[in-house]
Amino acid sequence: MPRINLLPWREQERKIRRREFMVAAGGAIIASVVLIGVGKLLYAGWTDAQVEKNNVLKKEIVKLDAQIADIQDLENRKQRLVARMEIIEKLQRKRPEIVHLFDEIVKTVPEGVYLTNIKQTGNKLEIHGVAQSSTRVSTFMRNIDASVWMDNPVLLVVESAKDSPTGGSNFTLTSDVVGVDLENGGETTVKKVAAK
Image 1 (cartoon, rainbow, N blue to C red):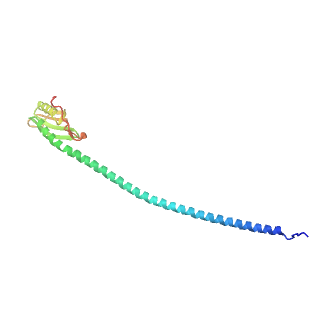
Image 2: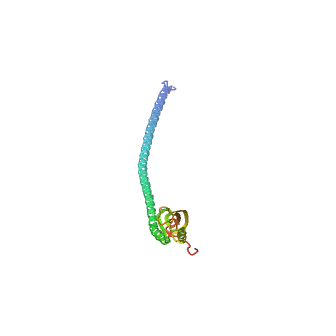
Image 3: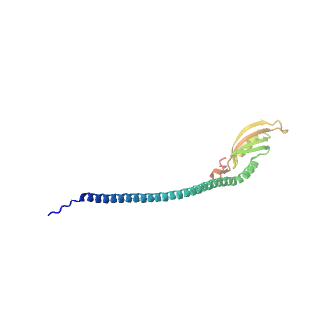
């Protein structure tokens, strides 16, 4: 006789499959949660490492900024010192000029001319004096024109001296100083005296 199974085997099969499905789904969910947790931990670790690197870089940037400020301060000091040295060098080069200039003034002043005031502004001399006559002033101007250290005499004022007991004329003239050229490193510029 044929055997017929009357037990609800399909129902049991469904329960077994449902249980296996639930176990598989639960395992997948647990695996997903574990993977997400591991991913978050890895991401948090990477983020913390990057934040630490950024902090180290910020500290180094602050140090470099301080060093750059020190370097700029040193550059400013260097520029000020170089400017001072240039001024000192110019003054050193110009030092003998005044001696030569006074020596040249003494040589150019003719007899009968007395200087009362000499003022130098840059490369210009303003000379005030008293002369016994206007021909003495002309001689003084010719001597200045023939000088190595002075050039271009220009007579500004000639008037009779009212205060002088000996008479004569008060005069004011200007002249260029041509002895030392500071822009060309202190080289002496000599005029062409032979042409005069």
